[in-house]
Amino acid sequence: MFYVEENGKNLAEMVYTMAKPDVMIIDHTEVDESLEGKGVGKQLVYAAVENARTNNIKIIPMCPFANSVFKRVTEWQDVLLKDK
Image (cartoon, rainbow, N blue to C red; front, side, top):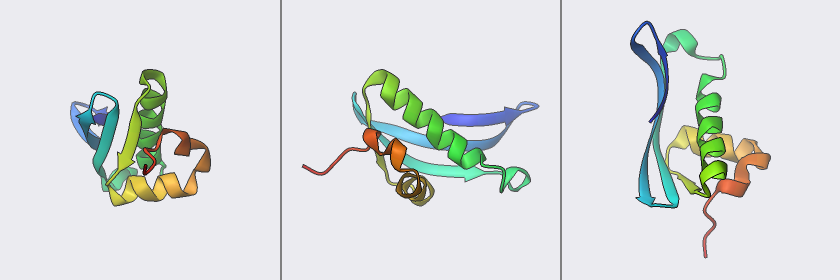
């Protein structure tokens, strides 16, 4: 899980599972309403992208939010698992 914590409380999180050692499925993203509109969800997706690039992992964004981010940010699409 990638998350944002403040004073011991998770305010935002992006949950994923590893389908294979080199395939990450982003399942869910949630941001507390106190952080809405501040780009925190996008920052969580970016953290996953950087992790994927560093570790040679491909991502399947099942989460509707993460999927919408990947559609808008074309320079992150290099980490997406392409259909074969």
